[in-house]
Amino acid sequence: MTNAPDDSTRDDFKDYYEGVKGRPPRPTLVQAAAAFAAPGFAVDLGCGDGRDTVELLRRGWRVLAIDSSEEGVARLRRRDGMLDNTALKARVARIEDTDWPEADLINASFVLPLLESAGFERAWARIGARLRSGGRFAGQLYGPKDGWAGKPGMTIHDRAAVERLVSGFIVEQLEEKESDEATARGKPKHWHVFHLVLRKP
Ligand SMILES: C[S@@+](CC[C@H](N)C(=O)[O-])C[C@H]1O[C@@H](n2cnc3c(N)ncnc32)[C@H](O)[C@@H]1O
Image (cartoon, rainbow, N blue to C red; front, side):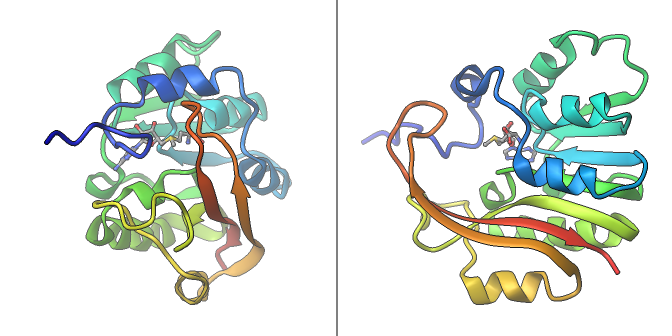
């Protein structure tokens, strides 16, 4: 029996990028960026084809965009005005295996649950360590009622686990949401998502 890739697969995001083409930036990223008096340096983890990265650049931020998908990073670089944009650096790498400079904002939209648990723990520790004091994290975690919970290689957090993870931060948003919505590839899914905006004291 073959294991056909499904929407949570970590290696083939081509259909995903097609599905999200032209979509606006994530509200968590917009909230975090808007909370700064002036733009600074941001790292966009799991940037995909750049829906959040381009918003940060539009707002005057310098951005290091990181994604494990060559296709995602190539699509980001092909976006209008990106090739000669000196405020953008992009890197193909796995979040759990790479390091980045200290940042004012670290964004990780809908990607951290795709790391297996040891990788997630490494990445979460690094996010905390690489945020400047007063810096912000924006991103999502998935809860146990999510349709992808239990899939091998993913990391799921219940409410208590999320509260432990955020305990060292000032919580500017911790919103737990459940919904039934098609994925970017058009498949039905139950979503159980924690939306986070956190500030490092
Ligand atoms: C669901 S998409 C989210 C893309 C974008 N952040 C957004 O909100 O639309 C997940 C992205 O994370 C990337 N990704 C998955 N696992 C990763 C990992 N371990 N390290 C870096 N990127 C990863 C995928 O290639 C994909 O571009």
